[in-house]
Amino acid sequence: MSIIKRLTTTLVSRIDHVVGEIENHDALIQVSLGEIRKKVAEAKLRMDQLHREEERIKNQIEEENNKAQRWRQRARECAASDEAKALACLRRAQHCQARTEQLGHALSQYEGKTLTLARDIETSERRLAEMKQKHLLLRARQSASSALIATGETDDRTARLLDDSFERWEINLSQAELALNTHATADALEHEFITQEQQQALREELAALLTGEEKP
Image 1 (cartoon, rainbow, N blue to C red):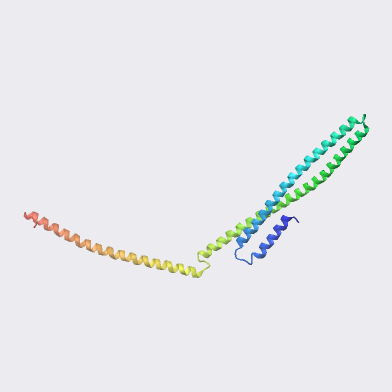
Image 2: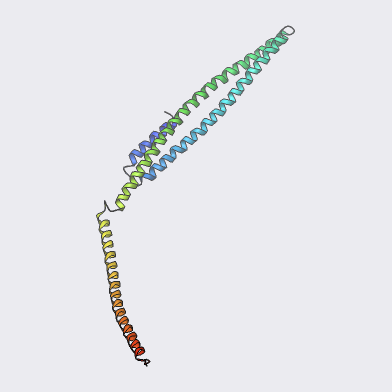
């Protein structure tokens, strides 16, 4: 089993084991998901290194092949005039060919490791996405549960306190409104008397005008 797969399995087991024993599930899961994201990022960096190494080996293989061709060409050119030199050139070509085969074997190993690592990363990212989605759903359920508690549907004591507060508030408002109504009634009575007095004064002034006398 790959390192990432083992890490994912271990963290999931840890979550399942510990989630029933601690209070802050959200924090634990966030830390665990953070560890998985970190390992996936490290695996991607490792895969990039493997790709670079593959490219380096491919370049070396191409270079060794070119060298082998040159040594064979030299062997053909000097075969007629200097057989010993021609044979030496062929030995160099064979050495380059052997080096090419070694590099090809190493390249196959790197490609196999890269392919396995790529599959592991894909699996880990899919598993991480699933766990993130489950985390979001559980957080939503937790929020809904907390909202129910806050509104008093699961807390009778809180509900009673809220009812008492509303009742006291309503009583205070009623007392204030009653005081305002009483004051308004008193003001209306005073206004009635003032109006009558003003009307009487106007009648007296009018009577004086009619009799030709000026009111003292």
